[in-house]
Image (cartoon, rainbow, N blue to C red; front, side, top):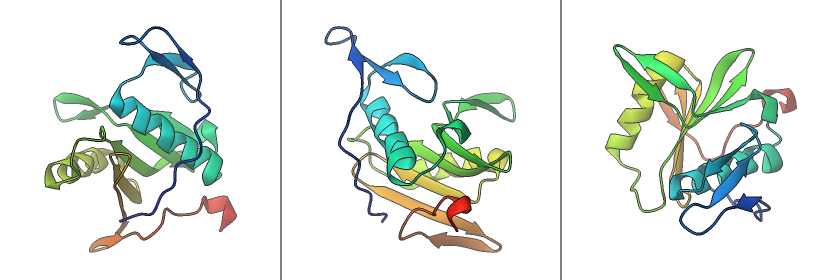
Length: 147
């Protein structure tokens, strides 16, 4: 399991309870604050603030085609114009299980990222895809320009 400490939140909110919105700095718009969105926004802040990943290379909830179906991935970080890290976010009360792993693997069959992460805000699991298999990550990879 990855050890991730989310930074102290400094989010912008608007709206009333039940219709509360959070400002998404990547998409540059107000989005409905759901439990999954809370996890997604905290993870993005961790990537940009804690890990130094460039916000301009992060995509959130972009559509992809899987055969005849359209799906949306939660977060992708691009490097050299290709998905490099894909993150699937779940709300905190959703277990990170085989079904969630299969979901991100389906997405990655199209995206072909090197790194995959599953998170529910409390538990975080990551893998590096290597020829012939997967390597469980102990930490998120440094941004390549820092290597």
